Image (tube, rainbow, N blue to C red; front, top):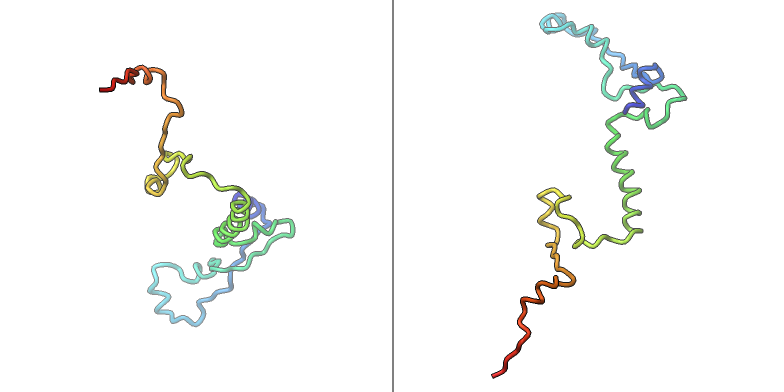
Length: 133
């Protein structure tokens, strides 16, 4: 985005607009408008206007910003999917639930933290004398 703005500011990327006219429109319609219709029409760049770019402007800056979402989605799919298939999956039990949105946490498996070895104090609480009757 900033690169595109840079090239526009330096005059290397231009959007000349479409040729439009109000010729043939009834005068009473034009007079009833709360703005100068002929001035507005002459400065209208229009949707889908052609882009005039210098050859030094990279193609990525010549596309419309409307295509940024499509381009980003394609990059994610073309890079992310193969990388996901080539790497081994993460064990879901080791994910930290605090890093996910509250709505997503309900889909994560419950995290169970069991100590590998109980502390030595817990051994002292267990009676060792077994009396048989």
